[in-house]
Image 1 (cartoon, rainbow, N blue to C red):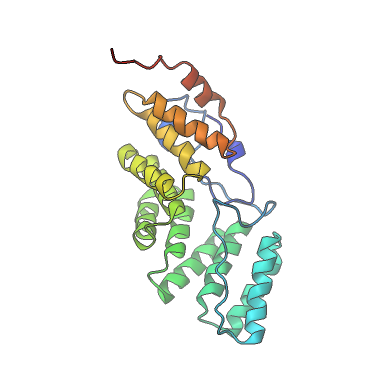
Image 2: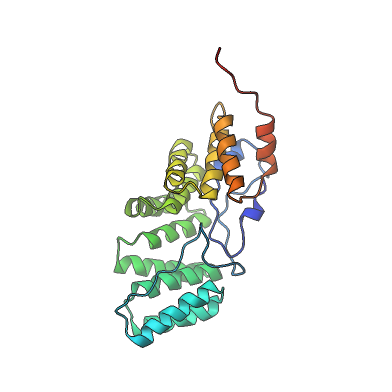
Length: 250
């Protein structure tokens, strides 16, 4: 099931339940985590926002931080990189500078540099959930599912009310064939944020891959995803249309 349109450039990876590959033709859908590119707004409902600067920064450092965040909002990632690097020189252990540089490098497709910054952030503050989550995203894009599983499990542990972390974790679990655990994570993401279109879509996929498929549950969450602006998927639409009618108890 081709979902290339869901891999929108400039967005963080849309994590899709890989279990659907077992249900539909092998060439139909990719579970890859794509490398994003900067041609859409930096901060969207299902993406990660930059970390704001601390109010205790001296004026020059605070200005560099604000310049970097403003540049990210305008998709000027090269400028954001320069600004955050300046901040880091002025404040070498500044967590927001390190994490935001990781986010910028990620958006520029510089995955090795992004990983280095996220690892540096964790070394500075091991209980920061965002760097763990982003390391998991990058490792899954490299097909290193064991590492991604461990990193995203840590992200969920540190930020149990972060729906995006649950959605990412669910997609990694699905990629490993752990469908029940993946479904639990997607359900948790939807509970935390009912308007999270990716999680609604992924949960619909999980219900379609049950044996037997839970068509009505899948239909409900798929429709919710469409209502939230997710593009329709022809194969899922066809699968739901061909579903047997629900059995009405006597």
